[in-house]
Image 1: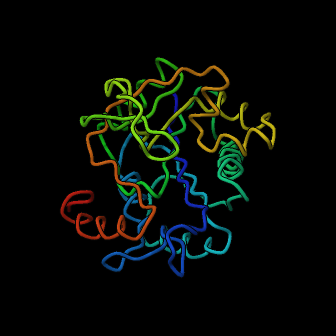
Image 2: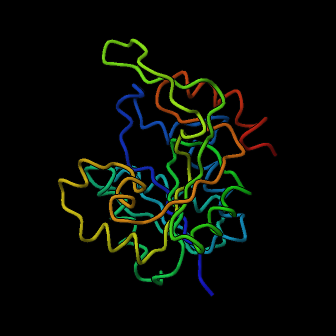
Amino acid sequence: MNKNFLLMMMGGSGTRFGADIPKQYIEIDDVPVFVYIVEKYSKMPEIDEMVIVSHKDWIDFVEEWVRKLDVKIPWKVTAGGDTRSESVYNGLTAMKESAAKDDVVLIHDATHPYVDIQGTKDVIEAVNEFGGATLGAFQYDTVYQMNGEHFIEKVVPRQEIVSGASPEAFRFGDIYKIYSTSTPEEFERMTSAGAIALAHGIDMKVIQADVINLKITYKNDMEVFKKLAQTYFFEK
């Protein structure tokens, strides 16, 4: 039977956030942001193993917290690279020892501080059927295309637009082959696994997200998470 692997991406330095430490390690109610996500995934029976890609200076910190959680599934922490794509490749390489080609890899970015349980299950099913899938936030407001001077040029049909969310997922054999053969220029040009997968002909099914698609990029995003962490995203 195929296994499902979580690849937890948190190797960045968070320079745009403007804090003294990377945003994924900031503590909310005495718990680092990434721990909320790891704990939730580790309790899903659908997740068989976990690889966490950490900033190299924070590996000991991450391992200490995961041990505190007493995670029951196999897990390991590996260092990220100089770019997002290198970090994904490092994580897939760390997974290679135990992952078969048809196993599912779920890539979750720690800047998305939530776990959509049902959405994740549906993403897994979609990968097994189509080869690739992603959670996505559908658009309900009017969507415009603007020019470089911020003037509206046209209305874009909102039913054709979706905001990428976490996780995005693929068969291990497919995505590992792509990352192990892609050029540095391709890594630099395409920062998301979805973009790289599409460029290599992997079909991706969009699964509608059932949670607010929050991404922590700036400090006001963290303020939103602080207010909703215990009452919405990770309600006990």
